[in-house]
Amino acid sequence: MLSISIKVVDGYDYVHHHSAIFSQSTREGIPMTTPKPVALVTGASSGIGEATANALVAAGYTVYGTSRKGNQSGQRNFSMLALDVTDDASVEAAIKELLVLEGRIDLLVNNAGFGLAPAAAEESSIEQAKAIFDTNFLGIVRTTRAVVPHMRRQGSGRIINIGSILGIVPVPFVALYAASKHAVEGYSESLDHELRTFGIRVTIIEPGYTKTSFETNNLEADAKLELYQDVRARVSKAVNHAMANADSPDVVAQVVLKAARAERPKLRYTAGKTAGQFQFMRRFAPAGFLDAAIRKNLKLDAKSPPQARTSHQPG
Image 1: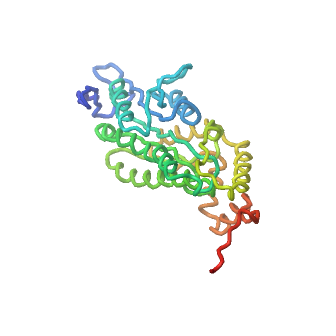
Image 2: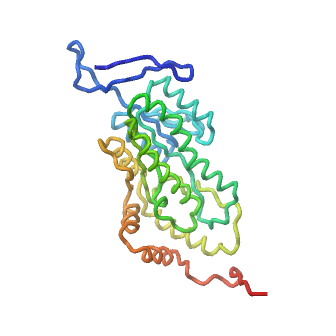
Image 3: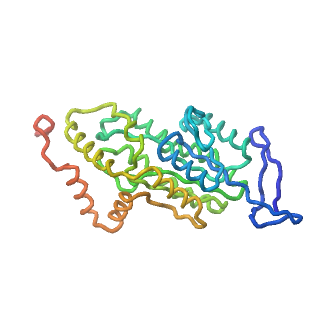
């Protein structure tokens, strides 16, 4: 039977569902149908976020996507909310708006993020490093902190964080991006332990190369050094080659949907062929083999041009 009480959240009333609702339940002989679960997908204006939102709509979810600008021109199968994951007030306002509209949130997909074009770790300023973590990691922390209290009151919820295979298999010349995704891995694993008691599960999706506008919109390193020019070009060429055979966003979206609907979700799901291959090598191949394969593929042991080498002779 459905039990309903009115709760107040930040000055707004919303309907709070205490008991589970089953599609075959009846009340006074009238069949009761399960209401659509409510999902919020950040970074849903394009790419993996948009594909995920569409897949959830097709699966019967009521879906709200987010972007920094919110409602933009163009027809969508889901509503858009304005949400900037780097702004505490923006996150709180968007969650409040969603609760006013729907009264609950059953699924949070943390997808918003950005990357850097291939560059050495020292070619990014501290400010740029902070910006990467502010979006890719702290953005997830902000939205999660805003949503968890409401899921806890419901006694259920799913949080799915879009990580990257680079969060477990770091590749050179994407150090800061990989580090931000490593942070997502550690945070998500700890969080799943903490929230499981309250009926909330946390999952990480680990895509490989995916055909989106993500790579074309990558920021350039803001402190480039000439000595890395040749290797940057080699790494960029390798990435472009991999992107030619990359998975579509729909591949990732279907994995998100699988995780969202799983009765007993796994902590991690890889998405796509490349991600699966990397995970297999990470798990079963000797560390030296993987290390050598990465260096060989990127030609990292090739001699640097004379002007790029430095020598430190004893005085």
